[in-house]
Image (cartoon, rainbow, N blue to C red; front, side):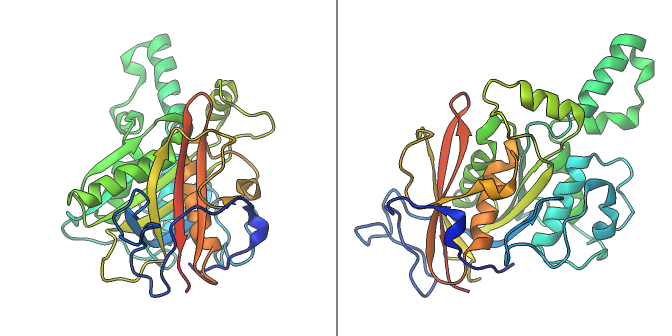
Length: 322
């Protein structure tokens, strides 16, 4: 899970962020009170990137390359994957890696952990299934759709599948808010932690790149020419600030309304290294990238996602030395 800070992956801007103390304790604001508007909202215990076909920088990629969704059994094992959609398979792989599990590790049994919540960001995760079912209903009526297909048509199918697979029994949410969905999911995770609804939160961003998803992504008003939709997933394991386990990073508050060309709070993570747009997963993917890039020394970077149509969100990531 460790990486190193590399200035080549940051866009230089003036640094106006809070700083992580050398001992990894919660950061303070500019007045040193720890209660200012930039105080951390969550601690990152683990971060994973599962981006098939993306050449990640040195120190960021795992030892084994990310398998595509059709080969998810190489990491997860075959049982239970038959009816899972590509975005769900990628999400399960990202969580598996964030938890540090070996390939094909036995799945946990017993009661679900009520303190572990799941928040997923995905705009197009099951659009292929929904479109296919809608077409068959239109052309042949309800007899053309089998009852076993119904779960994959639910907008919360990915989050539900993660909870069932890993035995997470806390709140279970999906965010589909457009280009800002990834950072909106992190904001919701912080809210669950601050209000005591969860002890830890798994935040997962995932998108597929099937033809239906690609067509909808390209047709949206905020689409950028030359940035096609890329399949992939990322996972953050979050806990409250001040929890006993030493964090990899601290996350500042998610800021809304930032201009797309405005000065960020700290150097921007250069998302061009990802060679495409992860759309609803982008905020989680870029945050995980920021955590994985850091680690040589205390570093503060900014994650920004969104567009002029959906709005823009910003998040400060305070990466501690490892």
